[in-house]
Image (cartoon, rainbow, N blue to C red):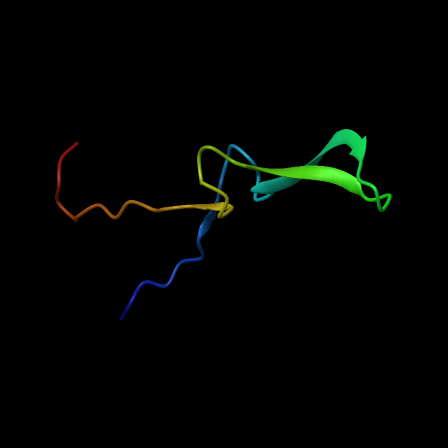
Length: 59
């Protein structure tokens, strides 16, 4: 039987991996200028990789 576990949420960003940040200005059409910032720990995915340990392996 295979072990199907749900992916773990990144503890650094709590799953909110990408944020839109306003730069404070507007373009000539009146839209806010924004930049996107990705979480450094999960690189914008929102989940962390789980490490599989072999049974019987010692730490």
